[in-house]
Length: 84
Image (spheres, rainbow, N blue to C red):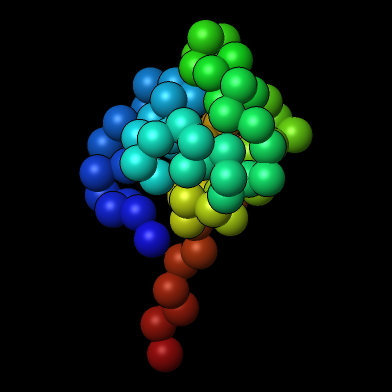
């Protein structure tokens, strides 16, 4: 698994190459996603991960979808603890 703290420190940039770096290189991410590395380079050029891939990238990297793309995947509401 990836270093979550290191990954989240840079995820705010919303750059596709963040995911590639998190897994070592673009080929590693592509292999984990079952796609060609060329697609990762396209994401890098665009500067974002397409919304249809966010769930899968989340599964592979362990990062929540709302942390990857907060515009399309809002954060879940915070739950308050009930005092007994």
